[in-house]
Length: 312
Image 1 (cartoon, rainbow, N blue to C red):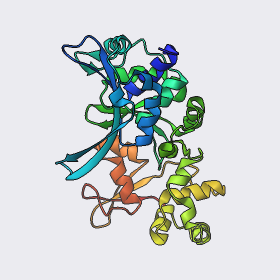
Image 2: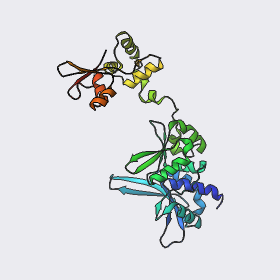
Image 3: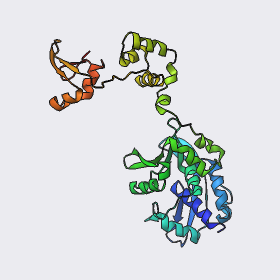
Image 4: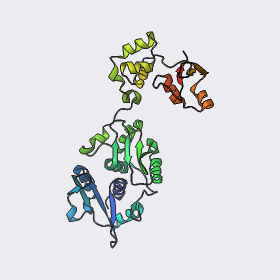
């Protein structure tokens, strides 16, 4: 093979995604098969294996199939190579009892990562982090992949029961994309549409959506001693947005002493006890401090047949 090392890394990247090697029971050698819903994607991969394809696959094939589960017709594109010793050798590395695995002698480089990301990667449009889909691999294999991608902060992320993907945090996306190079396929330019890393709390909670009411909120907070929780309800602004806005404008909203004493009332309004904190109540009565805090903040009326309020 011409530039066999380069071809092998491309093949490895494809096999970590949707590519697969087929070894017929009565055949001596394996062939490489690749399919995708993007014609441009398949043609790009096909170009690197063209000389190993039969005359029948000198061009990418189009296939339609009807899915009874969704009642829809889908179109895929694909190609298949000749059966060759090179592919058989890789089949022996990547398959055990016809089940695809991650070989432990796998070594990452930018070419492998590029083809893996193009085929089975995703840039989350909301949170801006990278997902590498690894649903078919065992958890131990995913941990191994995370280890060799540790410089990019790769971690397993549970998708559903016994299925995990690999996530690369937003702050590492820029260096990851720089390493693998520019997007080679117009269909997948969105995978390179990096969202600049910033204060995600501000972005995700839409702090700028409420810019018109912040002056009134600040006035009520400072002059009328209204709490953030009261202001959130009064102006229909998420609590995190108010806190982020206060932080950005250096407005002190946290009590100097974060421990607020709590008064415990019976249902007739009589003080039953005074507590130093919710944790003290938990230790003594085994009550849920979060539920008590919600009572103190006016989010619920009572808990365990008692009324709870912060001491002023």
